[in-house]
Length: 251
Image (cartoon, rainbow, N blue to C red; front, side, top):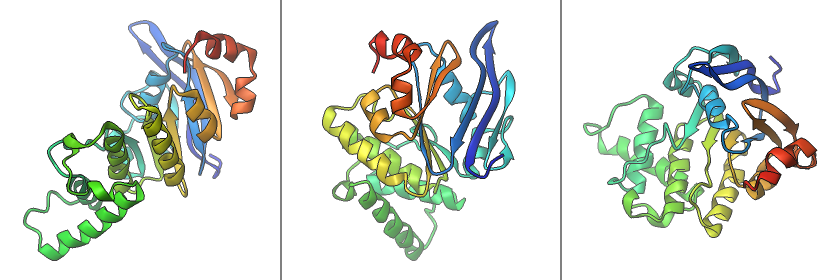
């Protein structure tokens, strides 16, 4: 494994009752990069993402993360190694405030249970770090707002803050722009760029404008196989990609 690669998939395959959803995928995610996984509906990208994030086990193939063979590891164990899937592991509690949500994630990162019995000084230390994270994602004014009362785009930012509280080396984002309006898309795209400093990000995303502006490397899947890989300029000029993805009206 090259020290430049934080995540490697070799011959990754997943079959469901005879249907091959992912077929012999080889993928290298470079350390410190933003890597996007795209493709038309039914291309197998969600299944591939679920395999990489350990929400599914492969039928065949091998996955290596930061020097560890994680092929048969559970998602929670992989998260402890610093590979964290946002919007899944970092669930937001709707009736807790933004500050309380981030504090719960900080407690989990420390390995503690809920600190109801902890001293006030310990909780205040967590509050200070939670406020820093809320400020980092532009949510200082929502500190005491319950998650259920926050605008959708701000809730997405809160989910990123709770993921950051787990101090990930590799952040995995599952369609971070889904359901967002134009203003929120720009805000979350800028936030992803900001939090990528010193980290690696792998994301599944439909919004091609976002993919073009954020990604260092793009992997295009179709029918469970890799169609093309490279930067946006290279991938977008590939005639097979234009036919299978761009020409299909997706994005």
